[in-house]
Length: 307
Image (tube, rainbow, N blue to C red; front, side, top):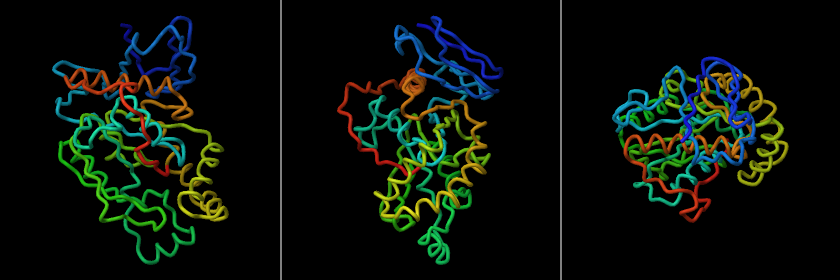
């Protein structure tokens, strides 16, 4: 088995069998630049051992980053609106055979930051109905609740998370998703790396980097079809709030990412490497019972998230 030790503290290019598979363009960030990985080099031939300032390498006794084996491996997944964050998480769970598993039995679970939008005041609800409320601003989220929930997850505490109704711009209090203790937790959202106290909880940070035109082309039909909004509403909201908020709050957090995934779920090489890294983690803690993708009936049971 070929093990790659990737020092992310200096820029450089690593080549295997004459093919460029990784390019580190700045300190601590790992870019998956293409799918030019040699076909003769499969995931069975290699495993990824990423070394960052957090020392993301496996130690003895099933520990990762010095964490006891019972502590979940917490992965943050950020990126702009409609960049493909939820799809990347979905692909990871599919390849690990977690989609069809009962929620109480899953080793890998996914949570969306959208479940933590705070309740709006009457005035804010009126603005939201007119497309004049900024849902992409850090203040739109209950960040204290996010912090507490992630801390509870790391402590192995069962959590209850409400669903969010995008048509009414409100939490659905009677629809609760119970998050049972798991080995790996994916937390995705546009601003999951914005607040330092939340950002520092993640053991691995992924940033889904998708072209802005592609993201807009995805968002427009999604908001019209799934949320019943007209074209003017979507475009005005995008130009007045979504695009400026992305540039001010989301994009600067890209520098905190350990792994940057261009093209989102289309980048199968990046996803396969991340999946292998998760498998290595589960194997080292003695819980490698995840099923390969082709051993289950793939479905689309994971609902699509708006960002």
